[in-house]
Image (cartoon, rainbow, N blue to C red; front, top):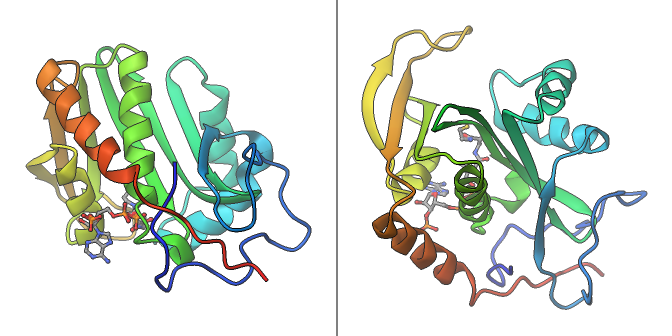
Length: 205
Ligand SMILES: CC(C)(COP(=O)(O)OP(=O)(O)OC[C@H]1O[C@@H](n2cnc3c(N)ncnc32)[C@H](O)[C@@H]1OP(=O)(O)O)[C@@H](O)C(=O)NCCC(=O)NCCS
């Protein structure tokens, strides 16, 4: 999987000092790097928490992530890597035939490069592999980038949870039903197809 060239998002230091210990894509060269989506591990949490603290007003704690990662049968947390830098993550919880999107976060330096779309594709594929037929989530009212992303995946608002967030703010409840149908498979394939032609230019010097 590859991303669009150019744009302001590629940071000069694509690999953090000291590097990471996550996946390095096979065959990568310094001109073009695929994105690799892999299961989130406890050792990834330092990077995850760095992003979490930047993108959420009420970030999850390390302990909460650890508890989530421990629940392997009902939870699936995935991380997106460019080289050995963790650039985003997404998590879900399965309840019966429903998958609940717990979070999607992309490093602010890498936003707008379709990583969120890529993570959502992976999330839906993972949900389907786990037998989910429906997808739901809560998102802060007014979080337009996220709402636009979810709409792309067929999710529609069905209601509001007032004062959902402890520090204040309402949540929009969104659902998409019947993700296990041929019709939805076409939607998902179209989104995945739209990601394929793009190329990430690695601007490391
Ligand atoms: C929401 C988020 C995950 C999207 O990640 P991303 O990698 O920037 O998303 P993409 O580049 O794949 O963009 C997907 C769609 O989101 C929408 N979008 C992205 N950035 C946007 C912006 N600044 N304003 C409006 N819409 C935007 C667009 O509809 C876009 O579709 P397009 O590719 O056709 O333009 C990211 O903005 C983020 O981490 N936000 C903070 C955390 C958060 O709010 N998470 C969601 C709630 S759990």
